[in-house]
Length: 342
Image (cartoon, rainbow, N blue to C red; front, side, top):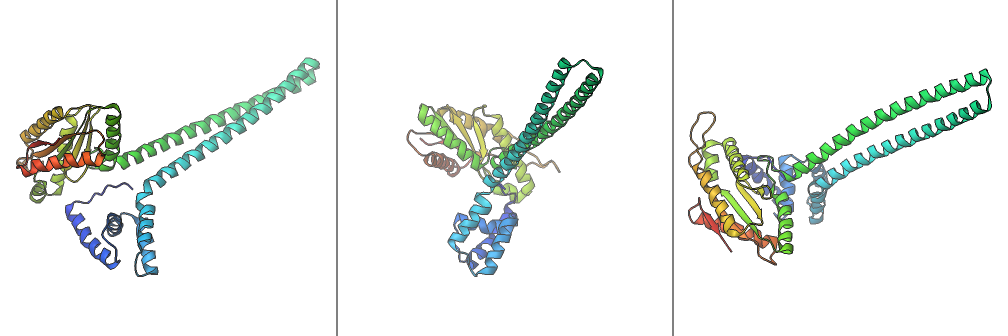
């Protein structure tokens, strides 16, 4: 399981109406850990958690703080690590079986080699026809055994190769699911935070420029309310595509919230980041989006953007929140604007 939820606003709000009474009933403070436990419980997306929590609630009237943390670590926070360990265990099992097969094959080859050496010595020491006939029969027997053994090993190695390739694909899929936003294919917030930590460390170490853009779709709730969530999803995908088209290979684009995006710009000064942000804003403003079912215009789709540049010796949180503050400056100034904050 990754930290991605497919619910639209309406469904998520319905879950929220169920979560809050549940928190009160269990006498749990609505912190992120307890909220996530209850959310996944009422959503029914985590069967292991639901079974464990049902069992625990049947045994006692409440849920202690320590028990809640244990459930969170076991069924939510730790799930990716355990999935990875399961795949590693499968890989170790495949390799063990392969090495065992190779050892057995090597033993058979060694035995056949000894037999052939013995046959060679017999030929050297004897010239009788009967002895030669026996030697030839033994050579044929051992040659057939070696050929059969080689074929078996080849088939086993071929199967092992396929299993390893399958495991590699599973690992890649797990990595993608853990780091990719399902709707847009961009990095998700979790992956973006990791990339931002690496980028700020590199900028600090090498004294390089690093800029950050925060982008929010203006009046997105109105799009959902007017046209429905399916159209809203298409608008989000459209914005994601526009952002990806306007960046370079080293730049990092992510969807970090419902209608909120971020672009990390290594080796980019703030003024250049502002120029890029203005280009993105202008292109999106000029786009004419229509519904596919009736060709009805979606109206003006615009974005607000905040830009800032990384400062020496500051935390990634300060860097991020300054860009977020710049974004809200654009929204408070009337939206469809780019604001910078030093």
